[in-house]
Length: 126
Ligand code: HEC
Image (cartoon, rainbow, N blue to C red; front, side, top):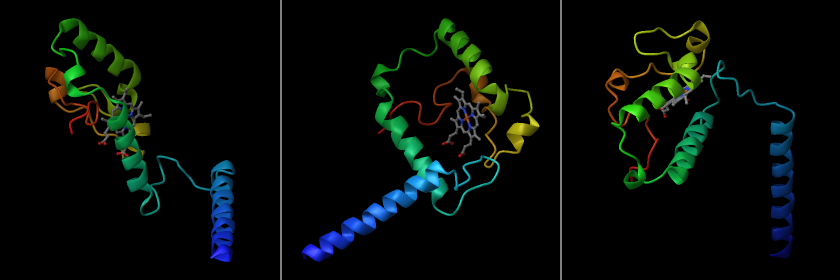
């Protein structure tokens, strides 16, 4: 039993050092232009969704989003921080954005109406 634990610890340490080296040396290409090995996209998407779910306020805490000042603030923020890749409504995405894998989706048409739920995962739903 003791030697089993020792062997497990040694292999776990080797795996941890190997993983650290892969990250530290940049051996795995995280470029948005390359696509990912099978399973990596799943890990990244789930990490993203879980992180948002964990930190997003509950729906009860979401302020009234139909306020004109909040809509204007959101539009300015989207224009400054998001439109470069996702484009503004009625604009096409840049070649840079189109070369990403997967390409960022266009801003949905309902963004224009200011309706809720445009950004999936922006608030907790479960
Ligand atoms: C540098 C480019 C870039 C910028 C800037 C950017 N995005 Fe994205 N976004 C992407 C790409 C690429 C994807 C697709 C990623 C994927 O599906 O794995 C994406 C996906 C998304 C998705 C869909 C996620 C899903 O699970 O379907 C949402 C929502 C989103 N972005 C919101 C935003 C918001 C809000 C901003 C601004 C605050 C923003 N993005 C800024 C590139 C960008």
